Image 1 (cartoon, rainbow, N blue to C red):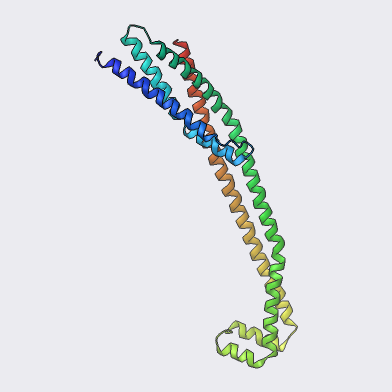
Image 2: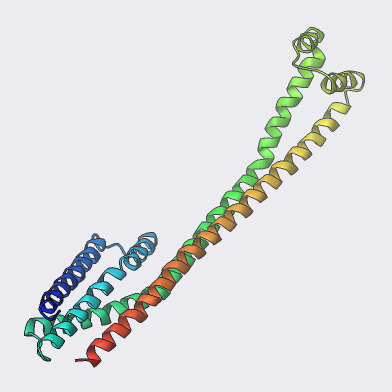
Length: 248
């Protein structure tokens, strides 16, 4: 068992160093090119940092464990390289603890601002749609008015429309009523325009509410996951750094 211990300690030390260095290289690559003025990139960067946060944590743990095994096997003596690596990892752990602690309020604020921007865009689209609604309904109204007048003024065209099935049932009865009382055409069109306006207005409001809920729900998920994970990582790195320095 003791013969295998030196191999175990060296394996853990090497694995720990590789994990720590690869994580630092990964973080460095993520920061290239830096664009901290872009809030969307900040949100994405924070999420990626947190997603990779467990790798250096495992690396530092391996390093400490390897040093502990080496100490136990060699009667309390650690090589200068091992000692330097352990102290360096404690410094990295402290810095990462601070980094993940800073990510918590920054990410929360960035997601909040992004959500507010999305909500403003949703409100603007809904307002624009409401403003364009009147003109759209008016265009439909004018087209229907022109069609009815053309049918009423051309008996042959009316008969062809009925024969071809374009007009049937209630539509034929309406046109016959319009022929008897031409003044009823406008009141009918205005009533239909009101129905269409109400329908489209309700549709716009419903879509706005759904989009608002989706934006709020997505922001909450993005914020809570990253913020909570970052907070846990900050605590873990702080405890790891304190434990390693205390054992020094």
